[in-house]
Structure formats: C-alpha cells, structure tokens
Amino acid sequence: MKTLTVSVVTPDGPVLEDAYQMVSCKAESGELGILPGHIPMVAPLTISAVRLKGEGSSERIAVSGGFLEVRPDKVTILAQSAEKPSDIDVDRARKAKERAEQRMAEKQADIDFRRAEHALKRAINRLDVKDNNF
Image (cartoon, rainbow, N blue to C red; front, top):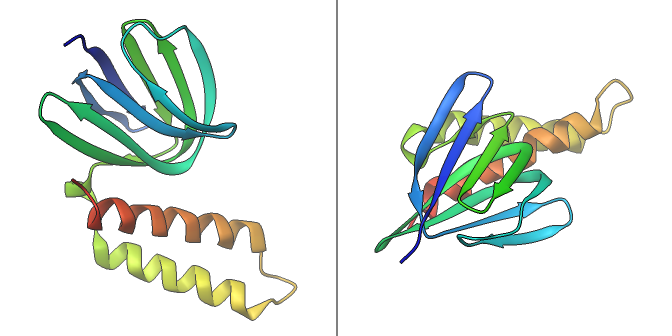
C-alpha cells in the first residue's frame, strides 16, 4: 500500500518523521483524514490527537495547536508542542489538569479564563493520548 511521509516539528525540534498510510487530525474546520495523493492544503490544528496509521500499527501524538501542510506525498505538522505517548509525564499532566480546573472554578477577576481553559484542554489531550494509545 502507498504511504506518505509524516513530519511533526515543534520549536524545540523534530518529534517524528516516518512513513504512514493515513493521517487523521482535527483542524479548526473539522476532522481531516489524509491518504497518499491528497490534494495540497494548509489548515490550522486544534488541541487534539494526531492519529497515524502504518503497516499493521497505529499510534497517536498529542499536539497543542499549530498548522498542517499537506502535499500529495508528505504531511508536515508544525505544532506549538507535540508529544509521543512515551514522552508524556502522566503526573505532570494530571497536576496541570487539576490546576486548570481549580482556576476555572474560582472565577476571580484576575484569572485569565481562556488561558486556564487552554491549559485544561492540553492536559486532557495529553492524558487521553497516553491512556488510549493503540
């Protein structure tokens, strides 16, 4: 079966580069499924898991926004942050989730609600990728 090269890059450097049969991710406009030969496009990503299907295997990577560039034979994800399940610190993610939930529950004027909500989404995504990696 045909494959496409997938590169995931963050400001800290490359996270992944390998060949896969399919990429699924969540753009701001909705869910995208990309197969080899896909038309070129660019799309902003949301905080979500990028699902990568390879020859007899699947994996997920937690991304915190960024952009997806698709070419017929290559997908490049430029993410603000990206983590493989093996790199996710579960205790740190749980503590970040608890802090964000606590900030959102306080509803004080000096709390940046959107920032807390963003932190909560990132923590939940990281925990989901770590717990549900296939």
